[in-house]
Image (cartoon, rainbow, N blue to C red):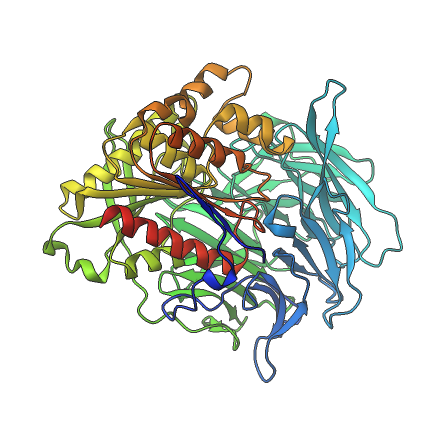
Length: 637
């Protein structure tokens, strides 16, 4: 790792690696996530950062033997998939945590590593599904394409590739304009493909006849997890995770004609197979034989899971049993060929881990033998609800620092933390940065302001257009509510956020300049005009669907940009940014820090030379935790 550059109000320093903090026993040593099972259910491939960066590991799920680093390359791994025939493990890596990902495959014994997609350094590649026999892997590749006017856009191309490298790739479909193309499933006979496409908030499932590459039909589906559905083994039923004409996503069964068509839009046979009041179906994993499925539900941020039997009546899903989850949040599920399941879980007091669920009746999840233990002394949250100034219900997770004592001990310094997205969601999972702040005596409140997922489509869409002003006001309303409860000291309030949350930090500091003593902006947008001009072309197209079009909505975007109101900034500001960030370029932080300093406001920039939009190296994350906590000690105590 190169040195980290910290730019202050008057001077610039360049701390060396020795400035990075030592290990903190209260924080995670490593976590394991995104697990994929082999067909026999005896081993797992997964992502683990025990070496300081997320890498590809394998390990047995029972018996002897320990974990093994399968690919020692330093590029962070972001997704993993084991082929149905057990011969290959496919995965994506993202150099420096940037947006230019690659798809690779490797044998389970660590040999035969091959690059399948993303060789172009200007491209980005994503994993799709395997064919049911494991002979082909679907990949999506994004390549910037010029339009002849000096501008470029992102063209997505979905293809089937041969992991052996014998057969040439077969192009299935392309998409441009806010593209999200992904191949989610193929029928066992290779007759039909299920693709996801469309901009955020307007995703749709596409039924594709593979013989002639003709679309057989489309159907609206939910945002979130890209694995939107699965074909029944006979190809006559399509199971979909959809919020079409609903507030919350449910399991839908779509009957298909022999040619793969769902029929005319007004005459389709669509059945709601499973639903829960006030809960989103966020994970759908169907067993290889199509007889059962695990449904993962998001209920106000906490997960629940149930095992259902699919059929024998067309479109029927009957609950077999509820699955007890060892931790609060289920993040991914994979099914093996024996009927067993592999669960990736996160909890508020434990590191992300992996649990196996055998197919035996009544079996409960069992931890993988190589996952980490719970974090001693970790502080968990409690849920707090409130009402925004316009009457919209809001909620969040409140962490009370041990030094603050019980609630009736009096108000304490408090940091309001804002998630990214905007469609992400604060959930009760272990966040090392929170634990660092709590150990320094700062309470933390992590709200879900309007625009967050998990609370229905109307809530997600409530920040569109001029609704974004209300989202900024939600930040102030959360802070004021904590003051009203007697939990937060009104003179020691801070606001912090990452990505879109970083934008909200800047917007709140200029829209409510007297409320917060200080703020920390981590890779946030400071000016929509410069963001749209500098980000990746396909990210710009996707962002326009959420924030507004850079040309048609230019006036609104200017009004929403923190740089427009920077004259009102009063609170000291720390900006943190990865130099390799091509999602929100570092210029967004540089210009807001320069503008603040020009107006006499204390402002600093912590630049991480080897990081992108996501900080993937533990040394960088540890440095950020320390510098942010030091900043709050300086400005809140």
